[in-house]
Image (cartoon, rainbow, N blue to C red; front, side, top):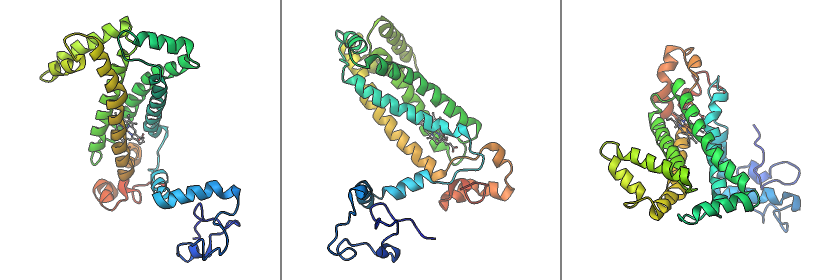
Length: 293
Ligand code: HEM
């Protein structure tokens, strides 16, 4: 089958250059003597994309990521993980704008947030998105977890991805907990004291954890800056790393077919699914367990 020309290698009439057809690397000098590689301003973006792609191999990565086989019967429930990812990205973007105006000091925190809400263009809107987005993300994480649980996606060989998911769940809750203190009003102050005290009652690590969170004998400036650092640096960094590992495993193993599709498998196919599929790279048994491409 004829392959479409790579971006950046268009010869203007839609055909791939002869050198490409032969498998040779195109040369701007020998293929187009006396001519520039670009055929016009119209091709400039495609050429730039091609130039970057040739050096990054992004197309092959994105093709493997976006064009991978998914099981037959895949439905809207499978979008919940991506929806959670979208909610996280919204939180990260709106959080950056909030951080431009927020001051993490007990005296100024509340005033900086009031200023953002009342005086800054779209400040109230962005703050609202971040505040409501936090609840949306927590809800989505739980619903996504329920989907993977009820579809049996936590079972062999995806246990590690489930464990990574549990870490993501905890980190999401930590985001909610640490973010709640930041406005530093009466409600957030007292609610956080209650939360930290509850943490302190936990076995073994509980008292150490509450000491760490309080960052001193009293709730005050050090507590607030510690919560702020955890909220905007430590945990988002950990979440990004964990999401990277989570998605790597999703792509490597493929998604689990719905239980009602797996029930249709012949015993041989069902046996084959996890072990050999991972070994030969066609994880989720894409070729044999009723998967569509
Ligand atoms: C920030 C939180 C999370 C994000 C962004 C996220 C993202 C994703 C995405 C995009 C997928 C692939 C599509 C899908 O199946 O929906 C996925 C799959 C999966 N997730 Fe998550 N996830 C998160 C949290 C969790 C949690 C809390 C758990 C469970 C404790 C979990 C367990 C799994 C499992 C087991 C799969 C594989 C599903 C399958 O094989 O069908 N994830 N996740």
